[in-house]
Image (cartoon, rainbow, N blue to C red; front, side, top):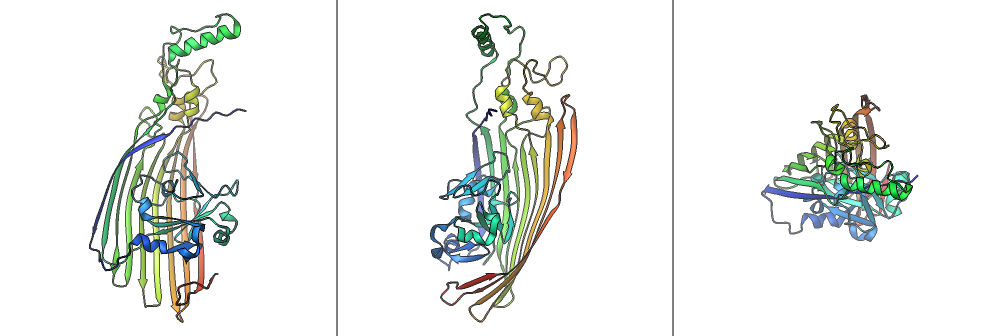
Length: 427
């Protein structure tokens, strides 16, 4: 069976605004980005960058700061050699990440956010990320086993230190679909249709005219719209005595470019509210405890993609039957009405995601480090769906799923005064 695919590029015009309010000490002359690049995350631990050379690709907070993307992975596209990012094309959707080719037909790239494994980071605000380390070589991936057959991305979120720093970031963008295929109008369609009859049958029997089909519909204009993407984020970081803190709150709205009609709030769209709090407290010079907390609430409107039917639908019919006021059937054509397909198929996914990591780290006998952590990942999606029958009567359904992952991890390492790690073990 031959399959046709319609690919439409998207143009995003964004207005970006950012502000920093801080009283920062200037005694340290090394930039924060340079400090991040000196040490990279490998598996559940860290290594100095010069020890791992090209086996790891690094993306810093600076690379993500001014990109109008709901998912931070979209900002990695084209930045790292050997890393292929294929976007899903839907607002808030998680792109596919292939590292040095496709290693498995069924597996996905895994993500480790502050020590917790997950296959989806759509809950994460790009403004909260300090660094992303893309592991490329088998030695780095071995610790994760078969889950990392397609690669792994280690994400470290921001933490606070020093005097208070306040950040406000906001952007407003307009999205429109570009390079839309130019289709024939009703007059051109009728002319080509009648020519085909003569070429196929040698006569004009069965020809059609504008008197029979007075409509003239551009189906791409009917289902596509110009939409808005807006993001607002506020964060505060710093230190209070021995307590380092980082906190943020943000809201993102992405309307999407598929528009349902008749005042129906469907089509495609993505909304996300997120908050984050990272704390670390140094009890003594050798004992540190901390907590990394993330919470997000998202709503995703899912549409049944009508682009292929919009490409194949004849311009001879109105979206709505002018006589009955209901959706128009295409008599003589086995093609669904794109307007009805977009309006009547209703699906919405709402999810709450909480990720909390508690850790303790002890340094003893000069060169020894012991670290233990407890991580809870609570994921609760709810999907509401209406599927139209042939008579366009909605059939409702509801699904609800709660997933809870718990990870307890203990790490022991020996780091001599030379700074080079000679032993690291994870229990």
